[in-house]
Image (cartoon, rainbow, N blue to C red; front, side):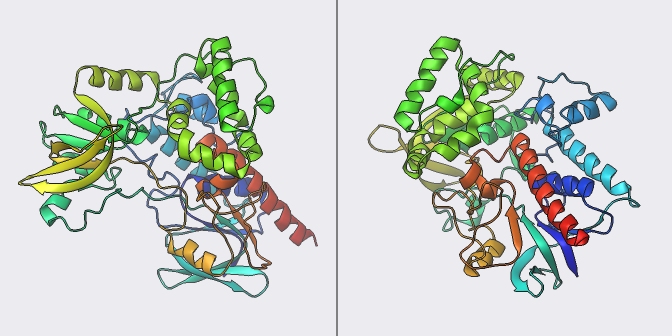
Amino acid sequence: MIYDAVLVGSGFSAIATLCNLIERLPATATVAVIGDDPGFGRGTAYRSELYLHRLNVPAGRMSLFPDRPNGFVDWLAERKRPLRDGDFASRQDYGLYVRDSLAALLRNKKNRCKVDLIRAKATGCVERYNATLGFLLENGGEIAGRNVVLCLGVGNAPLPVDVSRLAASAKERIIENPWRLSWLRRVGRNDDVCILGSGLTMIDQVLALHARGFRGKIDVLSRRGLVPHGHVAPKPPADFDPQTLPVTMSALLHRLREESKVAGDWRSVMDRLRPQTQALWARLPAAERVRFLRHALPWWNIHRHRVAPDVHARFRDLMESGEVVVHAGFLLSVEQTGNSLAIHYRAREARGSRQLDVDWLINCTGVERAGMAHSPLLAEMKRLALIKADPQGLGIVVNPQSRVIGDAASSVRLYAVGALTAGQFWEITAAPDIRIQAQAVAGDVAAVIAGKEGG
């Protein structure tokens, strides 16, 4: 079947785009969503059932629709879980809100476009007649679309060392995907755990362990030993114009430090910069983007991606008590020693190696940079020259309107939404950014379809 629009992916980016399409398309239009995620729209981040797994953005900024900013807060109030705009809701609640928002739109079957949710993975594609792109499905089916939106996320970052030669008994104690939370049931109350990576995922897993009664020691190992900061009570943003910021890393960091001194709190500077991040990224020359990714990214992450105040306080208490110890160093190897794992690492700015003897190694290095390695479909599309890789390894090349730019001439209108567009937009993994992009792409697609029908 040929659809007016095909969305490839079933996470938040796809559902945000779909909701906007449903609101804009005529009843005669057809839309298909291809994806094998059982959560369909909730994704990995929003399926957690642990209340301590919180959003890192206040509830007042998490509406699915940017023109209805109170959407999520109102949903919480209707379910007797009221929060203020500046409070931080659970990820589970947000996932349920996204699910309910889509379900409400789908219930109106008389006046909306036809929507098919196809639970399968797209494994290949080929350009078809009449300016369509056909997708081959793992279940043997095939569908095609006149307008296609790639909403594929990213996979988990792999361990930085090879553990393939370890015995099976040792591999069972290495958790490469911590979001498959069944591993928590296997950890003994007083086991020793090493978590690789010190970002937001690490904090989530530390809290998940302690919520299940874990009282052993947790060693956290990351290259720089930096951990996320916590949010503070909302303050007025700093009084400066981000459009006047310089576009070289040294000058930019100097200016931000000076603005922080004037404001008295660096968080207010970051909050003022936040809405202008995409515009600032667009102004950076390619060489400065490379310099940022190589040298400044870890500090950007801990200052920009902060955690809820009570979550941060709980994690700080665990560090102060010695239950969590953070090490700065480079992982060298993992070996089996009896029933334990020996984690060898080189401490930052130190000679020789050090060793941690633990029962478990948990990979919390986060997600890989948006690329093509995790997706056979993207690899196939690259081979066909329908897409091309971003020079900095941040997804695929798109224009400012999220239209995909490939090397081959194509009559198919191809877009991307979400993490795949990080090369163009940089800040495009959080819901507040994705919802704006999804709305814009849906509006563009709807205008094309309306023009076709009007013609």
